[in-house]
Image 1 (cartoon, rainbow, N blue to C red):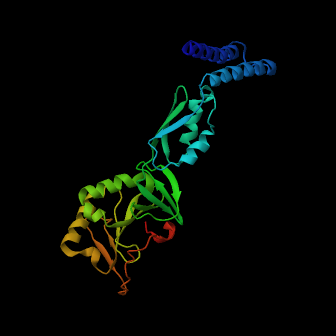
Image 2: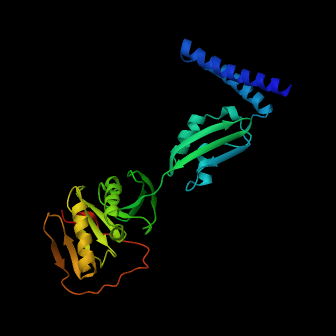
Image 3: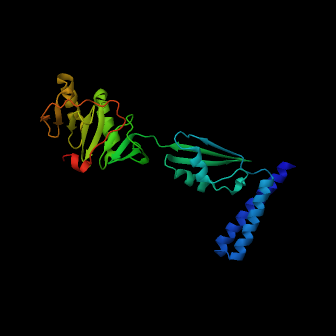
Length: 278
C-alpha cells in the first residue's frame, strides 16, 4: 500500500511540474496569478512527497581531499528534511564546481532521502609566485587557490606564462637528468620565451640561462658539465647557455660564502621585471 501511495505522490509531483512547463512552452510567460497558482500546486506536491518520506536525510561525498565539508554545505545551502525532489541537481553541481579545489562534480539524488556528490579535485603541480603572492596551479596551468607562502614540496615558478609552460619544461629536464632537475629551487619564465633556472639556493646558488625553444641539448650539456667539473658547486654567479655551442660563465666578484638557508620555509624573489635579463 505504501509503495502505491508513494508512486501516486511521485506521479502527482511530476505532473504538477510538467503542467507548468508545458503551459509556459505553449502560451509563454505566465501571468502572476497563474504563476502563483502553479507555485501553490508545486508546494503542495512537495509537501506530499515530504510526508511520504522523500526528504533529505543524508549527504555523502566521494573524492574529497582538499575541499572543506563546510564549504560544500554552504554552496548547497540545504537543510535536513528539505523535499528531496526540490533539489535541482544541475544548480547544485554548478555551485560545487565554483569551489576553488573542485575541477568537476556530479550530483545524484538517492531516493528516498539521500544526495550523493562525486568530486574530482585539482592536483597541485607547481607554485606560481607573483611578487608576494603565491598561487597553486595544476599541470595545465589552471590557477587553483592562493596560499600564504612557498611550499618547498612543489616546483616554484615565476613569470608571465610560467604556469602554462612549466609541465612541459619540467617533464623535459627530468627525463634527461632527474638528479639535476631535483636541485631546481626556482624556474623563471623570461619574456614568456625561455627559462632561467636557479639551483640549490636562490641567494647563493648558480643561475643558468637556457635558450628559447627546446632545452634538451643545453640541459644535456649542463649535466655533462656538472658530472665532469661540478660546475654548480663553484663560485659562479650564472651560466649562460643561450647560444648554441657557446658557454658563458660569470664568476662572483667576491667570495661571499653566503650560507644556504636549508631551513627556510619561504623563498623571496625580486620582481621579475627587474631581476631577469632577456
